[in-house]
Image (cartoon, rainbow, N blue to C red):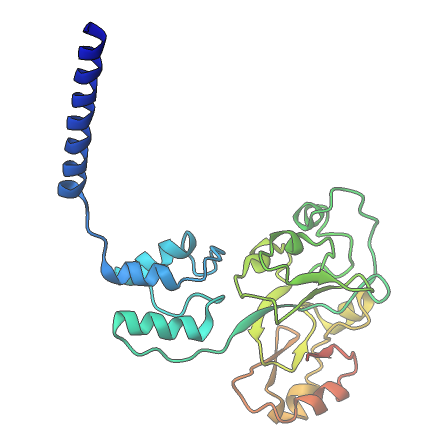
Length: 264
């Protein structure tokens, strides 16, 4: 009889405690912002950090709080930005999708090697040793640290040991740009058909000494082809894709170093 009474008492106490917790849960519950709920539901879930926030939820919360602008999510692109605008009740302009590109076309066949690196396969580690084994200290070190941080598996090594980025797979998170010690990886418009595959800012004579395909800042592309979109700054040609680039292909053919590369 005593055992039965004890069981009944415990059961009643459990029931009362459960009811109390259920009531407290409803009374103390914090209502979530309806806009935030909708915003989180449409996020891609990549959690790449390219927007500058700690994951998709963090970015969604920042937008809803008015602390971040719409359109910072590269994986979501313009389609996501439009949906976010609808939720927030604002109009959003479409932006050009940006992808990563390795601005270097030199490997061991065309670039001078200062020494043979035998350390760990990490670009930052190799860069500590005299700026890396290549004669060009602003080019690709080719150890593939960018490959290991890419969440979309968009970076690969081709048959000539060159590090390349697949523009179709690239989600524009910029993780590769931050891990690269030489700054050779930069973001370009996904629609770009021609790129200057060089990152060297040294004078022409020194560039030619270390690399057969590096930009020497001769300004042929800028001066002879004004509609190429090219300007030379600090001995390096850069393309402004917002300008008229109708002469860009002609400029690439006239380049003595052949440092322009075609895409697509």
